[in-house]
Image 1 (spheres, rainbow, N blue to C red):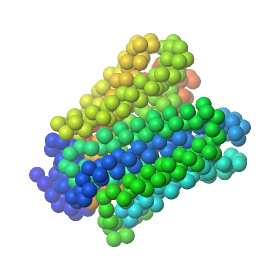
Image 2: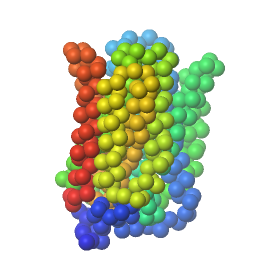
Image 3: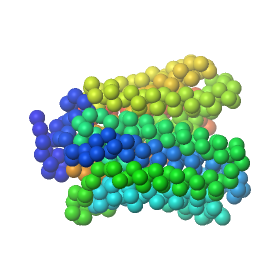
Image 4: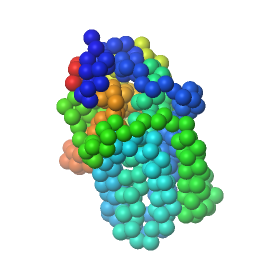
Length: 407
């Protein structure tokens, strides 16, 4: 039966319909440029992934240039965490007031922060620039996911998995370009200037083709987007998924090296196998999701990721570990985009604040997971500590049915 959404927009169906949120919600505005709009949104996702990977690929060079100790580098990275934590709810409020296309156009200049990172003269400046970079990245992230939700609604079919696959591919491209620049001896400043110019030009060209979406609340919306009652279930699903991703990023290779006994090269390749699973899962997600509900889809994802983690813990060896990492990547691949789509479907006129609120909950998990496992590993060993990962995946599967219920 149709229901009214929390903003008073009638005719929005619950997520129990087939095809997920894109099919279950009332169609949005018609696409004025058809395929060009989808390509534009995909391009913005690619640019965002490439921009962040550009910074990540040259962290060692930036560390060496400023002679940062491990403690100094950890302190610098708190700028990223603090900027993202503040930027996500702030971006949701800005999207509600101004519309996602306008916020995206204003957020795109955050790419200018890339050269500023390279030329930061001291640690305190690096922390400040990284915080500004993270705030801009968060604004772009919320705006592009809002555009993705609008395009999904307009096309009446799942598309978010493909958009997030483009983000992953952008990350691969940015990391590869960073590796080539480092191998060629290109300075970080020159590399970041070139990357920022190219990515800003590409993003600016794509912005012309994005969907128009004016402010929904007449400029009276709160500036900080906080979770409403209906958003806690998808928020905790994203919390589990992003905490799991954080654990794989920081501890996956170490687990293969220290617990599974893999060589240094194979342990490093473990993250690549996990990433391949993520990209493959995201590319296939939309086709599969179109044949089922979001809650069933996420339940399956949670079970796949849980089975992979159980194999890695129960049979710690090189080949079983690599196979398990691929399963984990497949299981986690589309959890975040599907949860974002579900959150967007709950407030059909204003998906931006919903996406921002869910992202904020999830990012707490992303930040908290690696230190938590590190603390447990210090006292009990890494293999026992990684049971936290298995518990997260089982919890994610248990939360999935809640997404089929009314908020």
